[in-house]
Image (cartoon, rainbow, N blue to C red; front, top):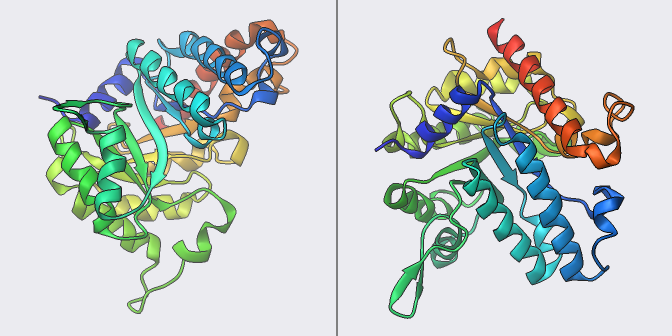
Length: 309
């Protein structure tokens, strides 16, 4: 049976597109014609988000291989928001998209196991086990070491799932900790990438990449290239493209000679492309899905052009 990263790679190859669309819904950015349908309660806002997400998924499901819902944008609306998260994940999987839940968990022991039960594994309910969110991958923060990762690895093996673990993130202050040098002169992000490579050695699939892989920001191309040199089996989840300033030419350093090695996240630049300078004069608010599809195709072609070179 193919492992989780093989399944993702084959979706990337099928669509010829190393893109994952972030689903980070901001209520005030959703087209007004959708917002008008629902009352301004937590339940109404959650229903609004679900409709918006489903329309986005319908627009790109044949072009983009994966989506990445960021859980904070759902948690902020309480239980109704989490229902929207669950419905979004289920709908994306129905459309045969790979679902990466951006949860950035990083606790230890039974707490880590409980998190893993919720997203990758199963939860005991009475005398039977049930899948809860049942996503394909999650993101993790390794600050507390292998104790915070091991329960997820166990579920990756048992349920054929995957994880992307933070090494060098795209935010401006990431260097406060990640760029610090150890006694041997090695940066923390390099040490972290090496640890992830070690943790993932038993999860390598037929394409030579591991289902236990690495998050590396597009905004730091030098570090991305350095990490590629020490993490040969890590498939990179690459945030920071588009709105955060990451460029396709920089991202190319993370890919191999077979044009594999990474999947590039874009959230705002895809979700709200109908508001962008590039598309706002071509598509109305009611045509936001068409703008997202157009931007997804433009992004795909730009990435492929850079990777091919």
